[in-house]
Picture 1 (cartoon, rainbow, N blue to C red):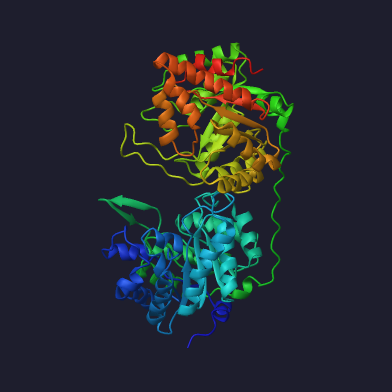
Picture 2: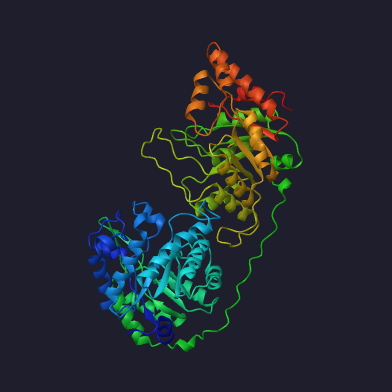
Length: 613
């Protein structure tokens, strides 16, 4: 009969099991299946893996439920089986343990971004984790292991969720890069004390790296927390051998590091990806031979204080750029959109920017659009225009196909090259265009992106570490007054304002009366608003925008005017006239107007803006 888990931990180092996923993969289970669902469909195979680890000497076995949350199961159409899968996972592990090992309920990340980086609220994440934790508790686990987390907010929500349904011990494990920081850049000196504060019982790291880099991270954690630690490294980095990922760290090598881990207050040691029962067997033998004294690290030893990050004050808004200064002083501004060209030749675009400057345009708006074909990046064109045309650019920067670390690198590079005005947008999925196989990936949305830039503007990265001098980005966000769900649009707008938005650029406006009603909904934000205007180029163009572009409302009267225009030239002229009338009506309502044209017609844009100032 096993004694209570925490009593056992006070007496000796406990060995956790190794990989479940890679063991199932090695037995022929395809990676495109839900491994968690095998608790219902192939329970004998899951139990056999558990039994192999128990025979190898594991003191703790983890349930096969790492991805058994509503979000990840939902991608397989299995969200309705969440409770059943988790309860079964706990009971399978209990049978395999047979009174010889403790059963840990394994909980992994949701697989989506939560606030402040994503649109899922912390309270929603907590509810997702709570239903999984409740099912595991019902199945009879002895403790919980929260593992492979990169986001402190998310693992904090998971700890809160577990604590709401159970008082069992919690091992909370982050996953880190070789430099010891999490994948989002949070250092051990930050995440270890925070996990302790949030109520974790044991702190640890797992996955992503092998034993060598993990030991250095453990040493840093030991210096800032009084809690016992856990370490579950991968069996090194995977190597591609004839199309299969093979982990090459030998069991003996892993065991040698286990001995070193336990010299640094590690009291739970095991393995992650690539570790096998033979690895665990060797680790168990190393732990038995070590006989570390738990008293060597008293439970109430004071934690060493962390060094607080000293952040510089942010750049005053009116000093960030000329555009920021003009808006701060209440001056009406005008801008024109310039599309990045196909290929790499930029002289024509730069010449258009020079022409716009001569006509007194305040800024050129560079969209980060996914039009068909190979186009120059918006960032590259913005830098070239600022350097060669002498007019400020407003850089669209989207979240599409970028992760948080890549976003930070891009933005820091943009700032180093002089870009200051940014419009932060989620971005649209790529169009089919010339590349039918092109896809889009979103790590965060525009709200999360605004939070990222606001942190940079306060001298910190997303992990909370100082970056030196703060950036001076002038932060713009987009809003669609003609959104189908106006309540949702306003709700997201309020989140962007809370995240640090400093001005607003609207989608093209065709219905001024409707826009005035929308303005009342967002007036509380008191941000400068630059209204988007778009001149129709033909009757067909107007019909297309009205009927096939989502989130656009074109009054029937405008469509009828375009239909009555006789010929393409007359229709284009009528489109400019309509846009000029709209801009004139918008003039007293907003702090600026920006004109977009379908083909980048500078003359049409200038005609729309004529006389506004």
